[in-house]
Length: 254
Image: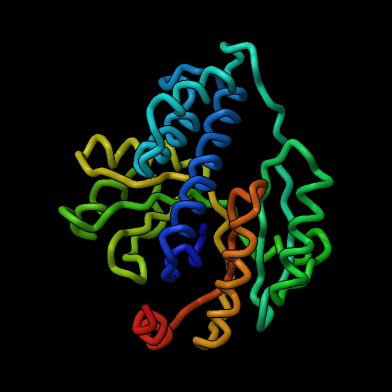
């Protein structure tokens, strides 16, 4: 889950977890293929590919799978798939705004599956531009909190163009927000300072957030999970905002 919704915590049976892990692996691989196709296989000259591989490794994607994805994307293996990026806009319960980013080799399939998931789970599709205006493209770097402090992170990224450093709601990481154009420089500054990071992505960050109660949050997360289960959906960005009280109530249900 991307954006602020990524910090939602839910419990799943092992079969569901395994299924979602397989889907997540496929999405990491797809990102690697696209990055390699656009910028080539050289990590030094292709920071987008370097970040995609870093994220995949952090999430335990096997190295052989990563290597094959790089070769496919860069056209070094003879087999490749052409993917198209599509952004759908919609609303969830209580008017929560959603941007649904798809990476697909079949536009018709992606559109049909997103519409079905939205209609079956309390969401509605929106006209192009009616939701996107509330989001800005930003660089978002997630730094694990273990072994470092907010001040350490701030000192490392301040001169590289970071706009904000804040702990995530679950307290397990820090989120560094930058201009999209400063993402690579900020990520490099962290590495130079000896600070590890989990992911560094260009994301859509909301300008205006919508506070929701626990009941609405459950419905929103149920919708987001249904969308995430779709093979073509890569990222979901929302403007949902959870107060500490709502976070505590949701956390108590684990």
